[in-house]
Image (tube, rainbow, N blue to C red; front, side, top):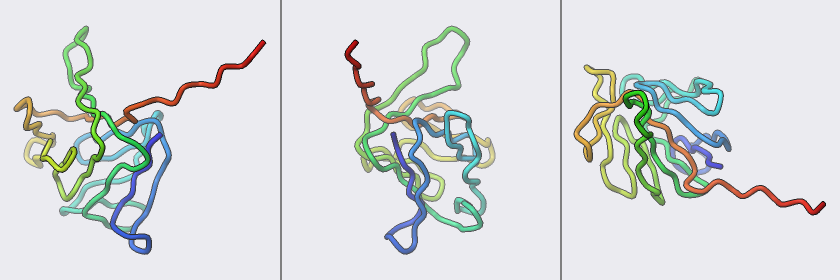
Length: 136
């Protein structure tokens, strides 16, 4: 499970989660699996519960990124795992490297690696905890 920390430092931050997955869809950030809207990107900041933050990062464990914008019957494109995933202003960084940039005119994220625009990015924990085995 991953948590999301908006801002920096213990006094100037807000943590949401834990949750099994998160979705960035254009300028909206949602918590899964029900995709409840948690933040909106406006004027170079993420608005969360009446507060504004220019950055957030995923904490708790490593993460993978998945591309949901695919043709029918194609597999989900996955990237990672990454030790650190950070969104600052309108850029997504994975392990301190630029990964994607939000392009407001297209209302989509430009992926540097694939040179494509995507609307939806799913962020998930890189390892799902194993369920305990019960003896019969």
